[in-house]
Length: 311
Length: 176
Image (cartoon, rainbow over all chains, first blue to last red; front, side, top):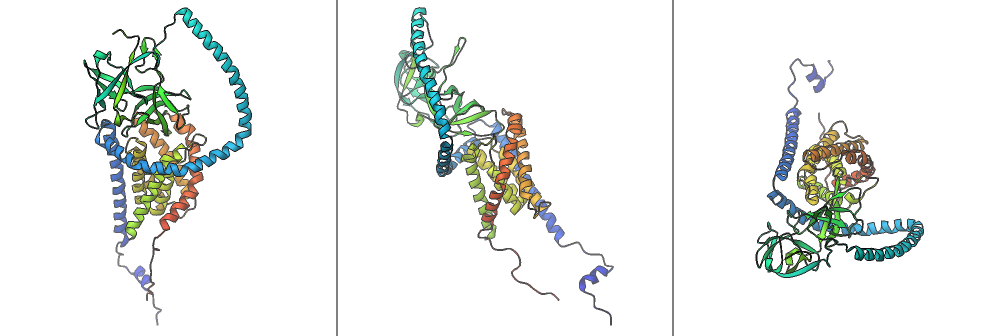
């Protein structure tokens, strides 16, 4: 009696051609679906880049991004708060490790600075005497080199796309185009239109306003412009080799280059450093600032008029 | 239920990784490099769940990072979509069940993403420095990412396995 062959061997041995494996079409469909999904996502990314790159900073995609950033902000703050104790603990332990050597170094520094203070005081007195003898004329200093024109805010930005306010003082009060505008908190903006009794002030949050600025502590320089979020500022063009820490003050730089001078006098507070964008491929830091001025609730401002100006 | 639970878990993982990256890890600079936990999370998701999940998670992670950083929308999405897809395909084919697959994926993806970012920023006219990106930052970045590969991979695997019904046949049928 012949031995029974199992079904598999019987099929293999039969001359009938085998049918196509059942899984082939489904595998092919999966591959097609996979490529289709990736293709769509890559295409969507390229479309996003193109639209974002070509549209103005007030465009729809920028607005959506700004809204998204606002939504994400609480989560970022929450994460920072959670991480803060760990950062502090790390800093505390790191500080302990270096405390002894740092103490010796600081004592040496203190001695050096004490000597320097004496030298500086002598130099300051000498400088004053020499200036008096030479009748030296320096550039206007803030606040001593300026007259103030205090004015009430009479009109506010009509929409979020405009960043201008109207003030109740104009050329009759000595205000001219490009005069800097401040309030008790810091820099507000720049006079961009002047009528007889009114003037238009463009706020610091306008995309067209750029202010040369400096970190008070490290002396790192950059240009302050508007941030993407509402009422936020960014200090751009800061060399990556420089270090700026959170909480440091950013003030106007007030440079002078030949006959050209900055529109903004030196030393007006702009904002406090809140963070920095880290991107390996960028040449510069992008420092986020929290402005000192609350641009949304301006009641009155002060226009700075140089004392040297001939009315 | 699994159809909804899996994407939800991936979404939460990507969201948390993106927030941690932009708030904490982007400011952790060691020897000039910063770890990229978004890429690490993406690697783990792509290896554990395949190329489609990898690509979709990469796209979403890129959007989140670009939105939080107020950077050009789509740049990071493009890079991470391709990275997620590639890692997923590697995990589905030659890297399947290989212990070294996460490390190889991370090292290669970090290098390629860095080159890709440099190229894209250059094409967009941003001021970029190849020396900074490729010489100063790349090696420490790869090292930091490799250092964090194991904990991130283990964490993601644990999260993805959580509350998921075991796969496979629940009953055995004897043939013949």
